[in-house]
Image (cartoon, rainbow, N blue to C red; front, side):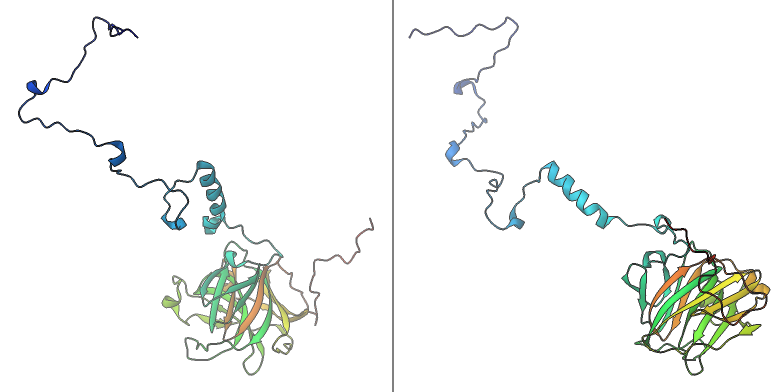
Length: 302
């Protein structure tokens, strides 16, 4: 086959050629590449699926990254307090909607709470503090015993109403150490907000205009405690019975806060429910219906 002439280049093309050895500078070192069979590799060989998974450094495809991100997003997302919807009237408060300020509260199921702390305090922010219902089962004494600020050991459970903070609120408490009775008191400490600031100061017991005997508390029994502020009066019901009613002092009526819970030295399963305000009776009868808003008229048949 005849030799072909080299291809012609345009006139303005500069052609570089390596100078011969005779024209190289004396200090120039000419590097030669080793054969490809002996060329060292600067990177590790690609994974072929051998070895433990932790030793692989392969990059997952974009589709796998998107699927993993979508799977992990719900678990990693954290709701702030402002993003948690407030409970509605008649709807039990969930643990996420509860602000526990003392002790430990756990959630056995949605809105079904439990505590065994010697002292438990909690409030439900964004609720109206005039009326609440506490459904609870007394499971016995708490695992730990806690004394009050005055050194007294007391077993009790009850509701917080209009709880501005730890120093300013209205208490409705069922005491069951020794003689069982209902205790209503207002704690008022203007200008103070934390327990460290007020301690046990500012308590004033409120005398009732009507009372009824308390039911007997037994381990494993379920009870319902209701309390409501309306027209300057407090109405308290226990298991379908009106057990306390009376006028509230100005110190209690000036409060403005949510509902809450309190328990001392008691193990409890419980539900906290915001409810509509119950209108107090002018002449309190011995009993009131549990659902006073029912018209008593049966619904029409469909």
